[in-house]
Image (tube, rainbow, N blue to C red):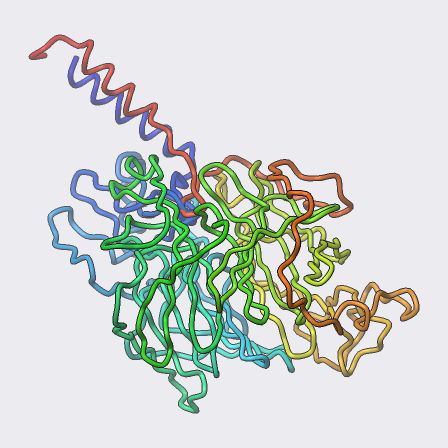
Length: 548
């Protein structure tokens, strides 16, 4: 009876994991964390997804069900796997993913990815990290090489790959990055061993062929180890907000909400928080201000943008809800203000982007709804009018979530990467390496008739206007004068009708694409894990005769 119980337990677990296509996790798509099974422990480059179950590795079903040949092939492609009894230091730096052994990447453009970071100095966009599908049997995801950074020239539309050395961060997803004075700063994220709160910098001004990463040892009490957080830049300070990760050590102002499912997924309790931490870039000292006003709920996978002395935050995930509430934090007085709008507004979402495009406007794109639908809609928020306007474009059939968005000096928002289907589904994720360009102001070399149209001149010279598929006459176009030449209001936004926390898509003209969305499980954004197998196993043990 005992042996039958064990076999039934293993069969049920294997069947369930296999049915989930190796994606039963909260991070980017698979087994969360180092899954220990007779002799095997996964510590490879498997990447994490949403915001809940964060450890990704080799599923139990691989150990039990895979034929010996397939398992040997997988282990050969993932040398990071270790024997169960091998020491795995918590702070050990992980090697770069060994993907070249079974897959050749194109040299002229970066690989498809989600959960990466992208920052800009106004002329170039710097892309690092993230994860993608491995070209092996099953639905494995793994991190991209950590020792390379891709640079996209916004003027020429061309990519260049640069190798990096020094204190190279481990391969990660869900990190937070900014570019200040052509120096890239990187904080947090999730790697194969869990969350981190390490801080790195890379001098992009260097003329060396190989760029150097430097790990900065900061003073003060740092934020907890987490990913999927947001950041604002103001007065040579980095202000971090929210995220999903470990329970903080020491005293932290704010709220931390445990995610009960994280105990079952990884054995390491995680949760959402609403913490605000400030890093002074002159002294590299952490501090935590005392905030006032109505604080947003804890959240992860939200979107942040800085306009003047205001740090805006929209949406994000808290437990099973993906929200559409809207706040700003005064970065001088540390007062929170909720923005209550009238009229139509974006639905609740996570894994979206929010980009400042003028001193009075923000551009929102994409994301992932509570009912697990990837989004392709775009919105413009006018600060002075306190209203949302839906932006029509030609990418309605190209939904994106966990992508990046960067603004150029010529009024363009450049979307890179992300996933086009349900990232939490137990099917192969549709990661992308495509660039979507939104032209929100007239470009110097483009006819004004293309103003406010979606540019599809991807990877073309800026003088080529043939890709502008939706030109509008200047007389009928809202134009930059009306929307972009206004100053942000000095006084706080007066509350109007409270924005509803909508979980269902509204009836808008924007389509959600044709990509099939199936079931999914993820972490930092947060997802629920099933305990059916464990409870069934416990029940069998209870009913079987003692001593059997």
